[in-house]
Length: 295
Length: 295
Image 1 (tube, each protein chain N blue to C red):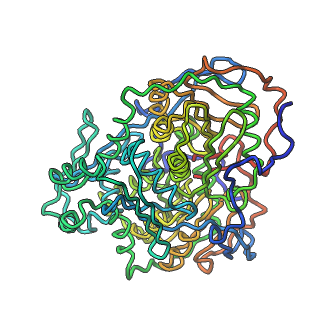
Image 2: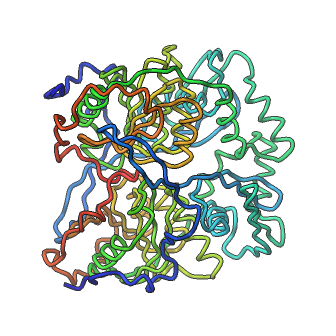
Image 3: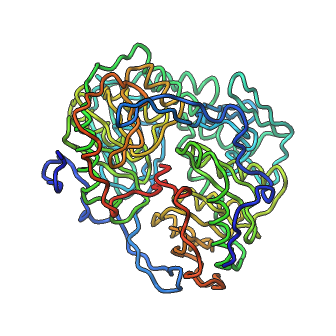
């Protein structure tokens, strides 16, 4: 058994911070017996993201790391190029707004202006732009040891988190080999991965030697975002969509789903797996860290 | 015990249709022992929604009921008024597009045009518009028997569904007392509820005597959509966000979460519950119908 007995939170560069004020609230209701029940419930607040003078989107977020969320959202939507020169990121807490400023007008703003002139709005272009970013992209042929997968899964699920405290939240973790590095949580499934993309962009971190772990499903959007971040391996507790698998196979991304206890299924990049662990030697997940329908 | 022993699918007006072609695909990968594993995986495809000549959004959907999805999306976003005269809904399968046409230009299009002139895009206004729709709204003071909750939960979870076959999908069910009526599933959590809103709008069905059941979390957006549909009771297997609870308390919506087997928690509208079932008499969920992280 290679599994760590407990997780040393100091391993993480960023771990869930349960003491940070304003992430959860105590609420009282009634349980099925009509008895008062006190619950810890996650917060959810709007955050409006501007790119220079342009209002882009209002995301619903738990509220931590608004700057990383804004940067990562814009980066993952193809609105900020990898080499874009960001001059300032201003978070105005009282009006729930982040403004990302660049040295010059971005090519996205130029495109948006053209699009706006013709059809009045650019909402529908966003997904097309994400797909465009994949053209010609091939991810590095990175090996993945099954021992890393088991270690990561065990460490992440035993780490104190808002999920374990309050539920109704998704987690995404940037990892290297068997070490979880950056653990983000958010009410929006995509916000957690966007916050990681923002952290990577801000710190100039590359994805080629990383693994992304998520509690959410492996949909097309999740696979595209991971590929755009240059990360060649995506692991999830949840299942797949057919299009997610198709895109992963196209861009050379190793895709592992339904990862729980001893079990997993690999639907893309199977030849990159190095089988260095006997699944029978892996213990089941402790009951309290089982996730049920984060939804 | 009032629970039905098995579900009579004929009770539903619309139930999941597992035989409908194109909703799932067989894919082969490797399991944790390196053995080939054949999996049923849900499809996911883009659907671009137009309101008259204006492109509004591209949603990722499993692909059934595109017309209901388009109508419900526009309705729930406040882009179609309750009394809007829809003259035609055209689904063009080959280009993944639905066009909803109205007799006259909608007030949303008018607003969008103004907004577009000032800031270039209207994405950020969408959420504000949804909140606006809640102003002055008070839902009917509808009683809820706990026996209905237990019946609904048992019936829905024992009904054959894409979730039970392939996972990675969310379900939402429109119910009346203890009877599930319309059961929609989709890869997008909000698409399932939008398809129900579209069905209600198309058939002129009102929400005051209905209950909405969802597998997803009770976030602000879910609560707002339910309220806009005029449905006074929202039940979920999953948890809450603080803002979702706040909005429910403001508009008079009964909010029940973490509904599994005998258990539930009510965080809004507690005084409307009629306790006609002893929780101890309710059986646990059968193992195969437990949902784990639809994500």
